[in-house]
Image (cartoon, rainbow, N blue to C red):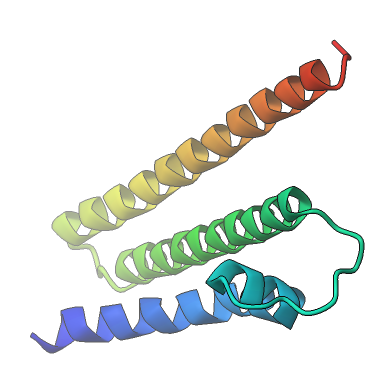
Length: 130
């Protein structure tokens, strides 16, 4: 019972650490705009630019969070493997964790790369490029 709670607390803490740069980088005016309050003076940026900047920072934080999860899983799998002491079942479990974490990271990075490529092509087409 204690183990799942501990894992949730650790992942929650890591998420807050990963998302902290968003709140540090996003000024108070943008946060107020997101919340629908008066944003104060405009600094020459449009709402679309602010939205794209915020979405970009959120995606960046999510990728950092997923990278943190990957790192934790790799360390956990390595710990299981190193402490297996010849127990084939534990070694198999550790290999599975490491393999699944690596496959998950590859899927996330591939999805990001495909999305980035498509967005760049759409932006280029919208601006009259190729």
